[in-house]
Each structure stands twice: as structure tokens, then as C-alpha cells.
Image (cartoon, rainbow, N blue to C red; front, side):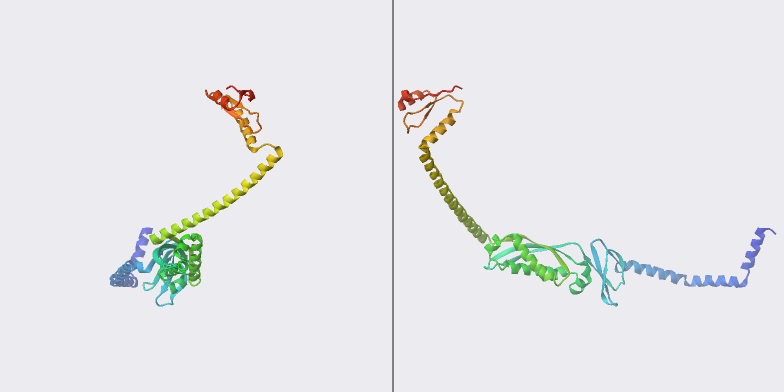
Amino acid sequence: MNKAEKVSTAEDSIMSSPIEEKSVLGFSRRLSKYRFGFTLTLLIMAFILVVMWRDIVVSKYPGEQGVYWSRFFGGTSDLVLGDGTHLKFPWDKIYIYSTRLYKIGDKITLLTKDGMQIVVEWSVRFRIDPAHLPELHRNLGPDFAEKVVVPEVISSLRQVLGNYSADEIYAKDEEDLLEEIDDRVRTRVEMFHPIIFETVMLLSLDLPPEMQKGIVEKLLFEQRLLSYGFRLQAEEEEKKRKIIEAEGIKAFEETSKIPMLKWRGIDATLELAKSPNAKIIIMGTGQNNMPLLLNADSPNSDAQAGNRVNPANAVSLTKGK
């Protein structure tokens, strides 16, 4: 008997065993009996998974964190869920918060100390503290900005700007005004809530047109008065300078015995004599006579010189071009 015949004989003996045959038939019958129910169960589970996918799987993107709320097991959890995909029960919720910078703003009408209406356009930038996100969710919820940030900013603007008159606000330094508003907002919000303010900005501040015109005219008049004061001060300094100059001239004339006018004339004549143009300088013999400068190119120079100075008492200096 060869090998193939031995294998065939062994298989026949196994299949022909009454116990084994009965077992195989029983498994086949049970599989046929529960096949429909098993398939139906898988289909129902797949359908439920597809329909309730959004209620079971929650995805959070970069810059987002979540707070888990359980309906039957303790409510809001202290665990902060980072970005990524998270699973939950369909009856539970995951609240998603942005950890990036928030920016909100609005335009409001306020009253100043003197009862004038001003229109202020403001903007504020802030962010939440991720480490205290569950606390923020318990106390304020997702609409925390409308509940806390906006009312506190408006209240701070009313209190700060209400302490000044319209012309004081117009003339006040913007940096000091924003610093005062920012300090008040931080004190009233950051002390009680996990919200971190970056900055508060005033985008525009509009006064009534007539009031604004009056303030501008008042400021211009004040600046004009200040300029008059500076001019008077400059004139006083100029007066002192002229007195000192006169005293110096007097001392010079007493020392040199030369009148200042004659000294100036001689000095000017020497400077003009250095010019390359042709000219005639006539010097008088008297002590008080001033030098006379004539243009040699002018046809009337000689006649004018003859009428005014005796040529016998004159010294001529000619320089050619």
C-alpha cells in the first residue's frame, strides 16, 4: 500500500466515524440557525455607529482644548482635553474652547464729567488660562466674553472717561488714558476669573462737532498765548543783549578814541576793497569824514566825487579786473 492510499484510508475512517459526523452536522445547523441574527446585529451596530458618529467621536484642532461633561458620572471633569480625537458616550458632552487670542470690540456713547456725549469705538484682546479651563466652564460657560469681558470693559470706560471733561479727554495723553482703563479692567476681571488681558485700545473717540471746534479754538488760543509769552521773553533777552552791546561800544570808543561809526566804515571799506572789481575809494581829511566808495565802471562816478569831495584832499586806489 502506497502513501496516497494510506491517507485516503485515514480520511475515510475519520469521516465515517459516527461521533465526528454528528458533531460537524450540529455545528452547521447552529451556524445556519444564528447566521441571520448575527448578520442583523452587525448591521444594526454599524448603522448606529454611522448615525451617532458625531455624538461619540469629537475632534479638536490646534489651538483648542476641551472640557468633558458627564451626565451620570460627576458633571464637569477637572481633566482638560488637548487637541486631537476623543471618544465619549452619546449622552455626554465635550465643550471646546479656543486657547488663542480673542479680539472683540464695539462702539458706545458715553457722558463726560461736563455732560457732553462722546462716541467711543473700543477693542480688547484677551485669552483664557488653559490651566483653569474647567473653572471657567463651571462659573461662566462658553459665552464668558458676553457675560464678563464686554460689560467690564464698558463699565471701565464709563468710569474712567466720566471723570474727565470733554476738553480734558481731548487734550489728555492717549497712553495715560489707556493705561488707566487697562488697570481698571485687569483689576475687575483677572482677579476673579481665569481670563488674561493683553491690551485695551481706543480706536476712535468722537466729540460733537461744535464741541470739537470749540476745543480746537481754545487750544489754539492757549498756544497763541504761550507763543506770545515766548516772544516777550525773547524780546527781554534781546533788550539785555543790546544794552550789553551798547556798553561795549561805549567802552571801545572811550578806549580807542575812534567813533564806532567811523570804525565800521573803515572795516566795510577794507572788505569791499578786496573785491576784484574796479573801484575808487575817496578818503576825506576830516576826522569825522567817512570813506566814499565809487564804482569805476559808472560814468557818473567822477562827477559825483567832484561834487562831494575836493580831489586835492583825496587818495585814489584803483584795482583792475
